[in-house]
Length: 228
Image (cartoon, rainbow, N blue to C red; front, side, top):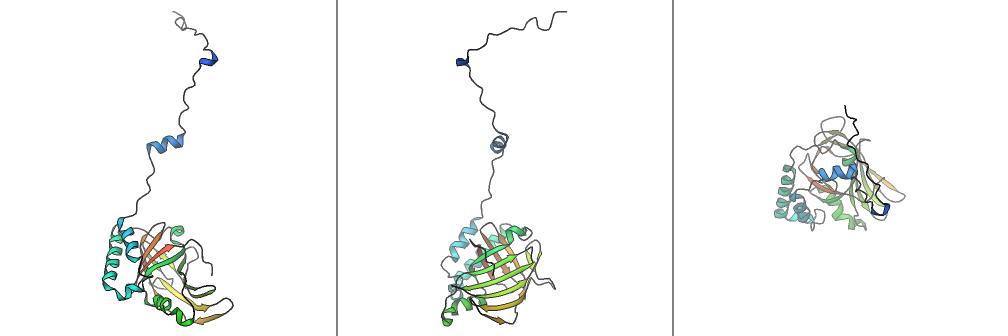
């Protein structure tokens, strides 16, 4: 039987200057990204249309006297909700929690305070909804710079896929305390208001909700956190 190495050839070494290194294989992460490129889901076109419709409405003050614009906005919200019907918008605590700043609403109480703030020799600043899902807390805040605020504290719990409920019944938030507050003073008000709201659309930038009374709310994630 012939030896296994009988046909092997011994090659002369390649001079160092003539050597060519083979290209390094791609890193595993880059290789997988090339095979499966990440695709961040694009928001539905109704989102941009909604933001356009509310952009000149002064948080909803002008919509109160413009039924045609109101109808257009509500129709757009319904279309936005229908783009992902029944999607779970409340189970991700990190995504739902945070300081949300008002862009537009039909809530008469909030708009009344915003509109009439000049009668108190002040002006309304940011209007906020602060949600803390792990802590079961909701704060509605109307700020009066530099240091005043109207604050309504409430308790909440989550009912997927879209509803936020208060703990004792089938409503979604129970306001436990209300106050008008300045830098070193505070005027308490009786607790008021209970109901539920459904978050019909949620992404990294905005949240759209409809409540038990049929009021609508469009908020954006604020660039800061409100801690009271």
